[in-house]
Structure formats: C-alpha cells, structure tokens
Image 1 (cartoon, rainbow, N blue to C red):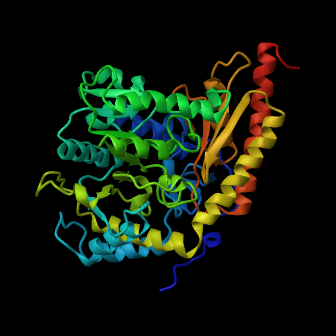
Image 2 (cartoon, rainbow, N blue to C red):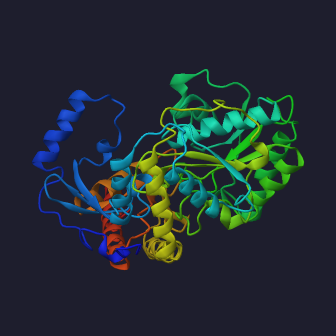
Image 3 (cartoon, rainbow, N blue to C red):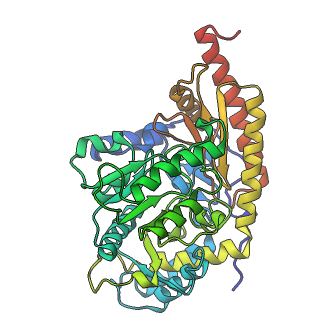
Length: 465
C-alpha cells in the first residue's frame, strides 16, 4: 500500500488566510462557553484564543474560517501532520474492528511493538521489552520509576534542574520546576536534582559539560547530600523542551551512560518530546549513539494525536510480574495502528532528513533576525525543535516580549509556542511535514513581528528611536 499522499499534499494551504478578527465571533462564543463549564486548569486558549474546527498537515482552521500555519504541532504531537490520511484511514479501520483490548494480544498490537523496537536507539532493537500502562507520557514516566526501583532495590531518583516530565506525582517529583510543584508538596522522598549543562551560561561548552558531570558524578556514586547510596536511576531529556529548548554539549549523554553503568544506576531517557523524528533522528539519544536502560515515549507515538505512551527498556530488566504495572487503556489499538503507520510514513517520506534540513533553515533565519535584534541572545535546537531566547541588556528574561511575539504571530496566522521557566524562549516544533514554502512564510511572519515588537519595547523604555 502506498504511504501517501506526499507531505506537500497534506495541508489546507501553504500560507495563512486570516479573514476574521482573532478571536472571531464563533471562537469567542466557544471560548466563553468553555470558561463557564471547564476547570480553571485549561491553559492553551489563554495564549492562543481560538476554537479549532479542523486541521490538516501543518495547518489549522478555526471555527470562524481563519487558516493558520501550525508551528507547534500540538506541542510535538502531530509529527506526521494533523489528520494524515494514511494514518487516519488505518485507525478508522481498526475502530470498526475493535478499539479496546486491555492487554490481550492483537496483530495490530504486536506489529506496533515490532515497529517501535525496530527504531529504538542503540542496541535496544531485538533486546527490548515494552510496557504500556496509560495514555500519556507522564504514565510512562511513572512506569519507569517503578521499573528502576524494582530492579535496583533502591529508592533514590535523580532528575535535572529545569527538567519537565509530566504532571502526576512521580513525574512531578522528577521535574525541576518549583512553580509546577509548590502547591502539591510533599512529593516523593529521596529525589535529587542536578544541573543540566547549559552551554549558553558558560564561556565554553566544555566548561558547561565538566561542571555538570562533576556534580552528577557525586550523586550517581552515592556521595552527595540527600542520598545514602547510589540512586535507582537518573532521568534525562536529550534536549530540555519545556525548560527552554536547551541542547547539552557533545559528550553529555555519553558521560551519563558511562557513569551510570559504572555504578549500576539506570539511565532513563525521556523521549516524549524528542522522539519519533522530532530532532532529525528517530530519538534524541540517537545523536549521542548511546543505549539507554529505558526510554519513555508519548506525544507523537500515537501517530495523529491518539493517546498512547510506552516505556521501552532492556530485556534484562523485565524482572517484574503480571500487573506490576497496569492500566485500563494499555490496549488502545487504534493508537497503536496509528503509531505503526506514522513510523512507516516517516520512513517512506524521509521525514528525518526533512526535519534536519528545515530545522537548519529555521535556525538560519533566526540567525538573520539576531543580527538586528540584540534582545535575541541565543538560537538553539536540533531538527524541528528550535528555541530562540530573548533577554534584556542586563540579562533579565523578556517573557512579556515573547508573549507579545506569540500573540502577534497568531493575529497574522501563525501558531507558535513558548518555553523556559520564565517563558522567555520562543519555541518552534512544527510537524515534520512542514513544506519549504510554509517554513519561509512562517519565518517571514516571525521576523516582521520580532522587529515590530522589539522596536516598540525599546521605544517604550527609551532605548530606541
């Protein structure tokens, strides 16, 4: 069966078409109705006030008929594009057959397990086991915590400062953002957070690497305050997504793999945002050519946004028994079919190469913007996960400026997102099917908006014309 249509044919258009105010009248009505009925935890419409009617490829149409370029992909979910028909058709067929199977075997389930195993990093292919437990990435993190504690018999777990792993209690304990956690303490005991190497904060990448690894080594060996022995595991994002699109220096993941193996500590790589081709490789850890003891996957693994997550780990760690980790929705077969089809589509249409090429273009365009915008202090990323950091002359994070950029981009028909604890990083993570024309049009909008917003900011502060 052909794995079509090709990426260029997936979209509603190649450029935005904004014909109504944003939010338009129908969007405003639905936003008001949602606010009256749903919990205060709803977040995204506060920054992007639209009501969505449909989406195709890298484009979204709201209920008022406005068409947007989508440079967020549902925060990294729609890697093969919204409503990709090759994936949708297979999921529909599976729905007609059976949707929910708990953990009874089906051909579709076993095909997905094989497909995911085939692209796993390092030496995991042919030497892995996959645990399903719940529909979102945070469920996979919870499973990995249990896996590490069960196999090592130790309680300590290690996360990174500014890291983010999800909203359930174990995942929240690992996350390094106090603003997410302060209202829910106490969380898990015996949790230590170590510094993530941020090259932009040091004179050289080597200095960032050495400083971080020195502190991590003390924790992994059991010599750090807060732990009486080596921990059960250490959880790391290959690139910190929500933390600000922070790309660690070369050698970081390799150093972690070496020291965790030396001290019999599990290395768990969180690939929930960086997986399924986002960085130009199947997984972010592929750039370092390491084999994690376990990795967590979610977001794009369900193909078209169908809820699915999994924990993939070395076969030797499969020591627990039936129901040691369970969940009602670990049999979401339509999502598994969609996941298999998405892997096929990415492979057939060379979307890893596309992510690398277009991601480099996005960074190059930000580099051009940076030449005339001193507030844009750093551009970084891999593949189609790109961050642009904005700070004032005194180093203060410019979160208000980034909010303005996001808002004005939306008014011109471009959906972008933010990152960083202070919200001062503009984050781009578009579908991997983004076309060259869409990339150019989107970056033209960003460039115009950045120039406009920074000029107004400087004028208001008396720093500019």
